[in-house]
Length: 204
Image (cartoon, rainbow, N blue to C red; front, side, top):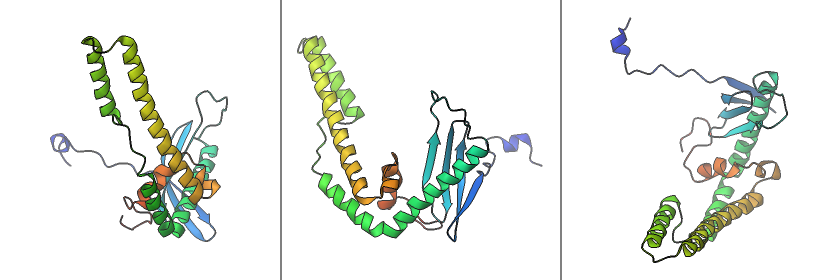
């Protein structure tokens, strides 16, 4: 048996995640319950696809007394796993077409030029500069507020344009049952760009 000082600094092996299994037609589908609580549940598929997960959440203000910790949670886990499989199957069957469409989308949206001070760091730097100009008298407080509002609006407008372009692309390339998922872009773009694998056992 190892002495306590020999175990210091070592981490205990992670407990395996609880699995859920369904059959779709003749295909066995296996997933893992990544997270589960009374109001939240997340399921990720591990066979025959990977790197796709779906979640479901009951808002705190909801009057529902349904809990994901019991039988309802088990049924929800199977539903989410089916959603994972359906998305994985659609990607697998249409991967090349979707990759070409995504490349064309990137080319088309390259014309969306970000504002000069876009991004958190650039925004904060410009805001500090505007505040300094108020202190030195180069800007009046009212002029500072106008400049800051314009800065915020430019960033928001650009982000809205990006989101709208992706929403339109998803609507053009995915069936409505999949396209309505609010997190669909985050699920499919890494696959289309080859950053993560889609098939279980394959490499990206």
